[in-house]
Amino acid sequence: MATARQTERTAAAEAMRPHDHRDCIRRVLDEAERRASEDRVNFTPVRRHALEILLESHAAMPAYGLLKRLDEDGFGSQPPVAYRALDFLMEQGFVHKVERLNAFVACMYPHETHTPAFLICRNCRSVAETCVSPSPAALLREARAAGFAIERSVVEAEGLCRACASEGGAPCS
Amino acid sequence: MATARQTERTAAAEAMRPHDHRDCIRRVLDEAERRASEDRVNFTPVRRHALEILLESHAAMPAYGLLKRLDEDGFGSQPPVAYRALDFLMEQGFVHKVERLNAFVACMYPHETHTPAFLICRNCRSVAETCVSPSPAALLREARAAGFAIERSVVEAEGLCRACASEGGAPCS
DNA sequence: CTTGAGATGTTATAGTATAATGTCTCGTAG
DNA sequence: CTACGAGACATTATACTATAACATCTCAAG
Image 1 (tube, helix red, strand yellow):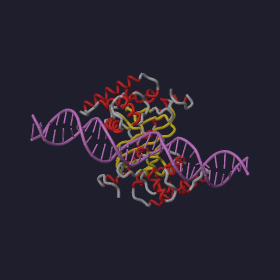
Image 2 (cartoon, rainbow over the protein chains, first blue to last red; image 1 turned 120 degrees about the horizontal axis):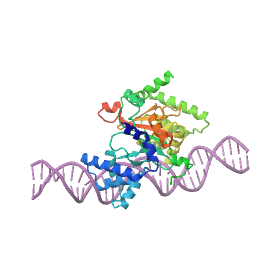
Image 3 (cartoon, rainbow over the protein chains, first blue to last red; image 1 turned 180 degrees about the vertical axis):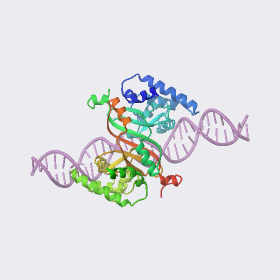
Image 4 (cartoon, rainbow over the protein chains, first blue to last red; image 1 turned 45 degrees about the horizontal axis):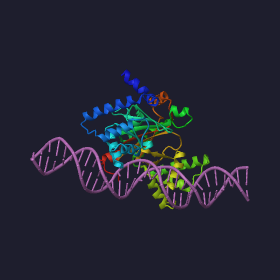
């Protein structure tokens, strides 16, 4: 597990650092492809293309931003086009919704179910996803005491990424 | 700190259990009142009444639900009425937004700044707030490695509360 | 007095999401 | 072969959430 831990430790740092983004895209897209065919789900062109669009950056994209892109690329202009694709991608775990932003990001860890945690830059909207352990022990204790069955949870942390901080809060290039 | 820990351990259980809710209301309202006068902020009638409305239950209330109530009680019918009151209450830490629901709940711990964690029933929308420790160590490590400065964070856990589970998922009475 | 900040009033609009219904396609059971 | 049913997609309409922009009021400090 040495490599896994290494990856986990530096995932957010990597996501926020300039890097060859085509690698992210290819890696995640391949994995999604594989999972989809394995699970016998219908990874149609509009769904695949929606994922590709979301993979283009680590920033969260609003549904209507995605819709605009899909429309430009000939997939239709009505809201359900985007929301249906997003619903599918979220069901498969390929995409997460960042509630704080009402926006969506491609999952960087599509290979495993997990509790996502996000570092959300309030300035440039970049979103670094990290794999943290499932809900903290304290929360699980609380839930058990309350007879509450946790089905899914998320951690959303808002702040300033390194790039925006060093620019004094100015927008990212 | 024995009492504090006791409280912390059972907070969610208490919130989700039937209880004399007037105690919650009075306790939190008194505390808010005290804090407001201490901080010299203007706890105006509409702001106070908005908090009272949110305190009436442990369920999350949408902004337009609050607005409807405020309107019925003579405080005006336009969206800014509700959103301004909510902005104030959130700034003071008297109210939290539950992003998952686009809805608002009165804070049960208005006496201290904290990282809220919510147990959100997907069925009846009841929200139990618990005081967990600030962001888990793993997330802080990630953030530090990424040069990301966390300013605020929240944990939102969705699931089924005891009441809804025992009713087979039927709505709460 | 006056003036400036905070609170509120009012109108308009932007942004997010889903309901409801119909059509199309394609695999498959009969 | 063909009728059926499920899933995907098309289309229209509408509901819900949130903020911009500007006018007015009030009251305490200078």
